[in-house]
Image (tube, helix red, strand yellow):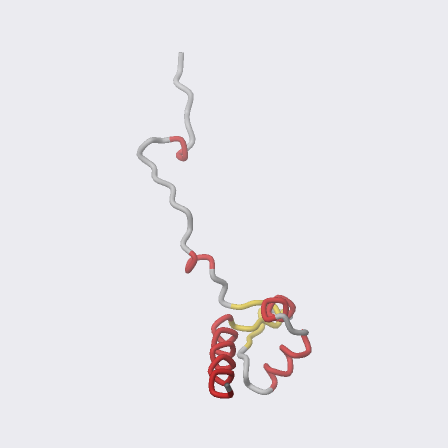
Length: 85
């Protein structure tokens, strides 16, 4: 009788590791997702982008906001809040 072929996940010599957080982090978020992430309206995101506070790019017709620029905005706002206190 022929031996059943197993998938590569069932092999003993294969180690499956979960992806690292860095591997899952997106480069950009759609405007609505960026707004939800920050807890603001989409209009606030668009105003911040127009003012140069957030960087963005387009993929086709979809406007995206870079995650790095969101992190930088939050860091700047935290610094301002510390100074004002």
